Image (cartoon, rainbow, N blue to C red; front, side):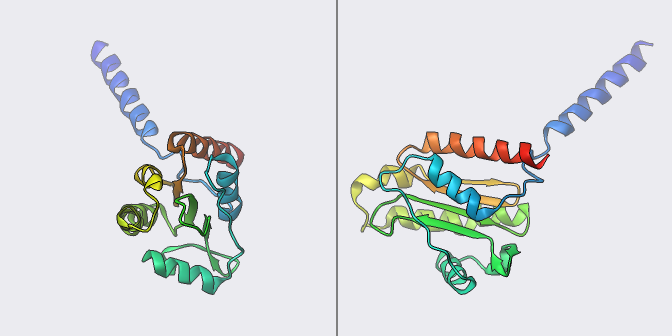
Length: 174
C-alpha cells in the first residue's frame, strides 16, 4: 500500500511540474500595433515615442535596418506584424513589438538580431551620455511568439507594465 501511495504521489508531482513548465504566453494572440501603443501609454519616458502608420514596404525597410527578415514575422493584412515607436531624436526612448511566426523564431530574434542591434546602440557615441542608463537597461523579452523591446527611463516600471499587459491579454484570450 505504501509503495502504491508513493508511486501515485510521485506521478502527481511529475505531472504538476510539467504543468508549471508550460509557457503561459504560448497561446497569446495580440494586435501588435494596439499592444505596442498600450505599452507606450503605460510606461514612463523622457520624450514619449510616437509611431507613424507604416506600409508593408516601410516595415520591411525597418526590419532590414534591424537585420531581421520579414519571412521571420507573421503577416496580418498583408503586412509583417511590427510596431515601432520612437522619438526620432537622439533620445533612447522607444518601444518595439514584433510578431514572429512562432515562439522559437521570437527567441532567435530576441537573442540574435535584436541583442546585436541593442549592443550596437549602446556603443553608438552619438547618444547623449545621459541616455546610457536607458540603453543599458532596455527590456528585450519574448512572450510566446512575440518580442518586446522597451527602452525607457524606468525599466523596472516598464517591465512591470509589460507583464501586467501580457497577463491581461492572456485573461482576455481565455
